[in-house]
Amino acid sequence: MDRIQSMAPVVTNITVLVSYFGQPFIIAGRHFSSMISGLFQLVSSIDYNSDFEGSAPVVLQLESIRNLSHIRLTRRSKLDLLIQLARLNAPTLQSLSIDTDIDIDISGLIRDADGNHTTYPRLLSLKLRDLFVPVASRQLEFKGAVPFPSLRSLRLWLSHSLEDDMFFRGNAGTLESLDIKVDDSTFRALCRHKVFVPGSHPKLQRVSVQYKDVFRSQPFATIAETIKFELGIGPRAAVREIGSAPPGNKIAPVISALGNHTCIQVLTILHIWLELWEVIAIIKSLPLLSDLHTMSLRIGAIPAGISRDDLPSFMLLTYASMGKRFRFCSLRDTVNKIDKDLVLCVLLLALACPNFDYAATSRSSHTQFMEMVEEAIASDMFRQYAPRLRRLLFHKL
Image (cartoon, rainbow, N blue to C red):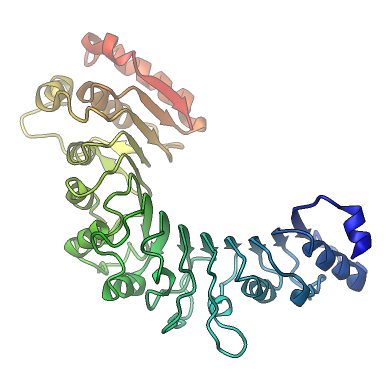
């Protein structure tokens, strides 16, 4: 131990990468393990990344590794032992991140070998991400446990459903950021336990909800249920993300219903293309909205009696000065999808929203996008509005 400390007297963080690159792993296991365990006793933060799939080359001396404040575990090697390491450091941990391509057994974090519940009194940030594919059902229900009473940031991307409100007990007054993937069982459990009701999480400022199983023939919740669920999550949150489509594949009614109940300034909608008229409904219903991030845009059905060439004047007459705070729109997933509809939507929004100054597309499609913008502005359809449209700035994502 003294020798290790003399080698690295000022170390505060350690990253361990264990890899064999397809070759047999040859290492003096006992001495290497002693060195790693010794180093861990000197630091407060561990970043452990391993893709070794055989027997673990590093046998950590877990009992000697205490008082850690930060742990980040990635990949798959001996995940159960590393989860045990996190549990042993529960009294001092402030952040814990597990990002792996295998199923995370949550019970190892919450219960010790004797079945006693573990509490992480100082944990502020918890991120759990695994394969996120359908697997055999496992009961993730822990009656009476209050494991994370001080959480400020929570990310749950798990292949298993939640069966109760365990992750949310005791931290309603401290939670500031939530990123969660929701399937049928998780949705029902959170509703059943009334985890999110108006006023329940006063400090929640960043919210991301991604709905699983959205391609089922029968959605697991009605639009009304989804709206009620969304309204209960962080009504004061300024940053919101809806990943995938909510049940029923209806996005605009859900967002529009939030308008008079939320403070949304930045909205991200993933894995669904929006029609121009849906975007207009969203902007009109969210008076504080400044930034919209989405996949791509399309025109959709044009109002009766209006031709495509009439759309610029129609937008100015019908939606003049709409969304006075709206200034930026990014189109994240436009690789090989640039078409005239997309360009048309952006230019029409610029006419309707007086402060819309910035748009962004993916780096790979940016050149094509700019060429089509120039062509559109020079066309008869937009020529008279060219001075206004040329104020737009276009960026690469």
